[in-house]
Image 1 (cartoon, rainbow, N blue to C red):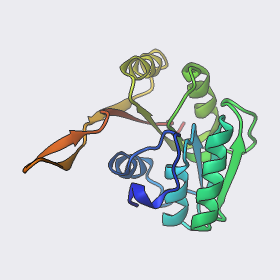
Image 2 (tube, rainbow, N blue to C red):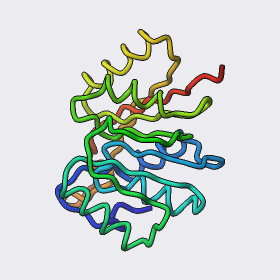
Image 3 (cartoon, helix red, strand yellow):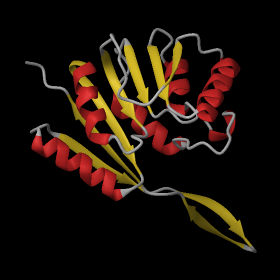
Length: 185
């Protein structure tokens, strides 16, 4: 989906190209439940809800303005398979999830990682996005301490933009994308 499709405000949003890669890494084709933590405008939740009509999607977001935007986008796209929870992760949840996306941790990364692995089904996938390298490095360290294998890529996107009589690629913040899988025992 194009970024312009979403109702936006001054709330962070996972941009189109990064969203496409992150959704691919979540491998939602056979998934039943997706949890989107730090959902921002809800772009991951909305696009996943539209692509996979049978997928139950839960978006958790702490900030009221962001929750309002997610609700507006939910209404706009009529995504009835999306549930929105206002709160700061980790929160009490009964469900287990096939996939969890972490777009924001609110300074609570270690607790969110433990909580996420407790809510993932065996074989479930965890995908995290970071623009701050310190947060990505903290995640790497956590995975290594807990002997959980992971893969990471850094994505750097530039959009072709006119400048005078020429063009250049206007950069978007580089994003580190980490993917991990809960082992089947």
